[in-house]
Length: 124
Image (tube, rainbow, N blue to C red):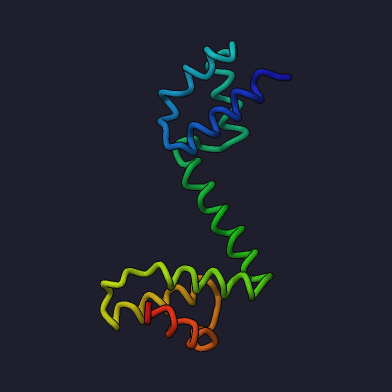
């Protein structure tokens, strides 16, 4: 197998773990026996700007999740209710309502359709 492939996979994992690209690039290049400039160039072509890789991957995951929820209203409703259930019990009534409205927009659901379930969650 091409040593660059495994080196890029390792670099991707390191970046997702929050490691500094300037620190891990030399280590990974040495470990896989590839020239540092070549690994950096291939990484930039394959992964894009390394400094923003983790953020871009998180945004892509969020977009994929939103697309999946839009396709499946049951999944969207369940995800919405799970998010509502995890709200802090210390929120005031107004803060809680504002968070529920924000979550409804994020999960693309009508909170009125889940009113009974939200009320049951509140009683816990």
